[in-house]
Length: 326
Image (cartoon, rainbow, N blue to C red):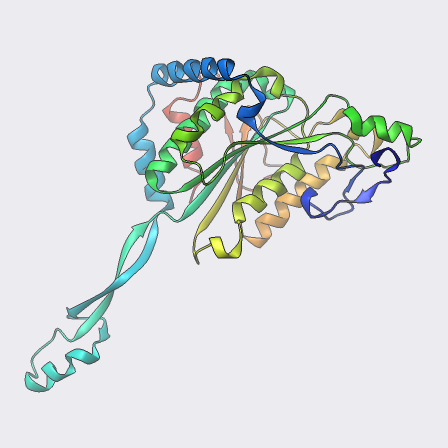
């Protein structure tokens, strides 16, 4: 059982590589965020969020237009015949023989702009992020709605821990005699506020779970980024050639998990986050963006932006994030 678990190299579900270790995954969980909140409380949170959105004066149509413009790319939709330039149309050659001045013997590929993209928001639900809960809920709620309208897929995910100070994972480590360098030493908790298959209207209640203060504990960022990026990539069958995968990580700093940092090299979690982000940035499979709340995340993310949420997410904040998408 986990009580005797030795530090093992992280498997594929833990953002493996670079000497990263996890003491035990026995208590790791992935939860639908809405299931962690009493239904009556969730209804209240959603009503509060709706009031805040109404008061904020968000230009939803403008955000949707901007997203469409930045994410849409031309998609082939067949061919137009009888064109004056393009590819020779074999079927029109007979006309050319009969009428040597005939110029409309070409065909051209017809394209239409289409938004083939999946945009993922990964929210750091560590304790210091609690003060931003409502602003974050507003931010991702508006983006999820706008992405729905723009025809793009959207996921809203979060990461926290199941306990403070290592929880049962640390207890098992203590019982095992405190083996050195145990690796990650807490109960990882990954949260799904909205998955790609669920439209915004069906997920809107769950998004409001971000207003629940005790969701916010500690944070193991590297594993969470790897998890969100894998979800973003999906399976090969799900991906059309040329489709874009964008991952926005919203955080106010580096990884913070007390038990892990005390039992390992203090740079252990930091280094892993950098390794994971670098791996995805180099592969190009997922475009990873760091969105820092009052803090510069450029030490971790090559593409990053600092947001000032002191006035709440106004239209300027949305423009800042949209400006990252090239």
